[in-house]
Length: 235
Image 1 (cartoon, rainbow, N blue to C red):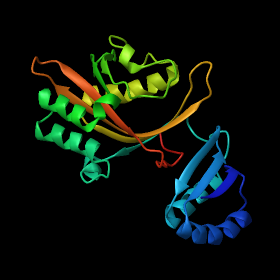
Image 2 (cartoon, helix red, strand yellow; image 1 turned 90 degrees about the horizontal axis):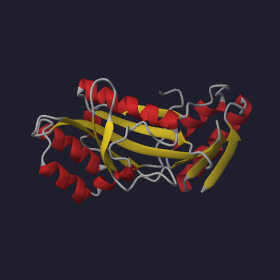
Image 3 (cartoon, one colour; image 1 turned 180 degrees about the vertical axis):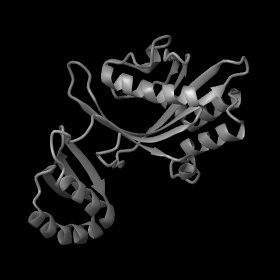
């Protein structure tokens, strides 16, 4: 790869104009990696010129103190995912729509057969915001000494990084109250006491389901995607 390393907000217009022809040529032959400082060192990779140059434009003049929020997301409309390359998440959404949000054994089989079960969390709760874990897959790796598989009965917000837990909880609560699916690109810098911060980029689908017994549950399924590049002004 070709690497460009810099501090966000510190590239001059002259420097930027000088770099662009080189980057446009370099990306034709091999990927270009951006390694930049914005509330910590971050990295992204590009294989096409236009998104690469647009991203450099955005980062070149970014000003502190708002380099970036720790947790940012880019919502998608459901129709954007009908033909999404991550067909397992798109298929889950289509299944939810086909059965009108009614949860059954067929949904569980789909999660198991696609492998999404390992990166799915199931919640129940009430409008007051008390959303508790019913099931947590073992495929979440953001923390070293914490697993959603061991949090049954606890709040989804009860995580080592309290700020991240609260932020995640708000997305689930919004889906619980409105019933509208949430499809997001997420870029989060997560901290665990005693460990270095970790950056996680993933695509997440939150759905509200009606169980045969009348209870309402939520599922949150995600797929890691290190190529996500969300505008830093998103929230």
